[in-house]
Every structure is written in C-alpha cells, then in structure tokens.
Length: 326
Image (cartoon, rainbow, N blue to C red; front, top):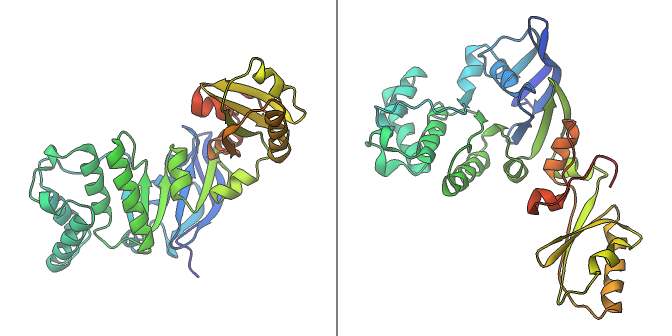
C-alpha cells in the first residue's frame, strides 16, 4: 500500500545550523497525523519541505508516491498555513473559483467543487458576501475549502484553530473529522495538546530537529512510567485529613483544591485501596473518585526536555513535579 507521506533521512541545513536532522517517518493513507514540537524544533521547516516550498539539503520525501517537488505531488495535496491566504476584497465564491483556476480546473469542475465545499463548510448562504466581513472562524473554514478545491488526498493543516472562538474551534474540528472520514489524509501541526489527543490517530514529536517519538496518543501516554493522580471528594471535611492521606504508604503527595483532594501516586490501585480504608476508618463517604494517568502534555514535556507539570497544576493551579522525584 502506498504511504500518503513517506520521509526518509530528511535533513535541512542553514549554514552550519541543522534545522531538521535526518528524520524518517511514514504517514498512512486515511489517518490524521499530528506533528508536535516546541517553537524552533523544526516543525515549520519540515512542513515547508514536505509541501515543496523548501528544498531538502539531503534525504527524500514523497506524497502519494510522488516526489515532493513534482507537479503530481502538488496535485495531490492541499496546504493551509497558520495565516489566512484568502482575498478579503473577493467573495467566498470568487476566492474558490480563483483557486480552482490556479489548479487548472475546468469551469464546470471548479464551479461544481466550489458549491460542494461551500455547502460542506457552512458558507453557501454567504458565498457572495465580501470576505472582509467574515469572522476569523469563517475565514479559516474558507481557507481549508480553498485547499481542497483540487480534491486533495493529503491536507496539511498548520495550527488550524489558533486564535479562534470556542464555536469556531468546535466547527473546524468537526470538519477535520468529516474530511478524514471521507478518506482525506491530514497532516496536523498544532500546539494544542487536547486537539492532538482528540483528533490524531498517531503523533510525532520533534525536538531540536529530531523525531523524539511516534505513536498513538494512548501508546505514548502508556509508555510513560510517570506519576498518576487520583481526584477524591468526601461528604465532609476532617482536620488533618490531608496529612493523614500523605502518610499513606503508596501516596507521594496530596494537594487540596476547593472541596477536592488531588493524590499523586505511582500505584493507583494500591492507593485507592488505602484511601477507601482510611475513609471507612473515619466514617467518611466518598462522593468523587477519578483516576488520571499521564497526559499527552506530560509526554510532550518529557520528550522536549521540560519539567513535568503535575496534574493538579496543569488543571487546577497546583505545584510542580520535578522529573523523577516528589
């Protein structure tokens, strides 16, 4: 089976600086492939090479088995950058028709595709309106539609939901799922860990120009032997309850957040048993019990060499957990 994207030993040098350092990976047809990394890690440089904008120093890459700089590869891909490339002085319809002309589509084909895409992206009723009056979310939807006018097999999305309101973010994510369900392979660059966890079938994390790890979100999280957390709430408060839980054998630390406690442990089953015993001993009723393993954010920070943030802080403003200790 042909890979949607195939990368072998891809390298990009700028003078003596290595921006991308001999990376290799494959993206399968029909998957949403996340590409994550801190600023300056090589994400943009890699994407520019894969979309034919920049020439690799060494290595090779193909899109649907076509060399990335070939016309055949460009015919098979659509590209949406983090900046809108719509023409504000044109209507949504005219933007799509103009893009279709750039791809060499016949008049019948580009008008047919424009109407299909405008309907799919919820813009059919405003197709004649000046794009200058569109919201940020509407412009982003139009940008993605323009990238699909040529029936792209592979869609490159760079930070598609950045700076959008909640409703627009939800709509863009729904569109990504719909496009993927119809068979479009999506290469998604994002800083949003929740977005990557929600949308991606596999994720590659790049750091300092090298691929640190590749796998599904759950595989990456399970591979981390890090601290788990348990959220508990009791029917009433007791003096020194926090201290009593900190004394439990399998508990590493405890944080109190409002009416809840966040308990950090390397062994959730044993810690839960000890917490249940403690509750029974003091005649307490457990109202809330939630266990949470390492998050995708934890994996990202571990791979990129940053400090791991405990679940209590990342979700509720607690304390930091240094790598390997309390």
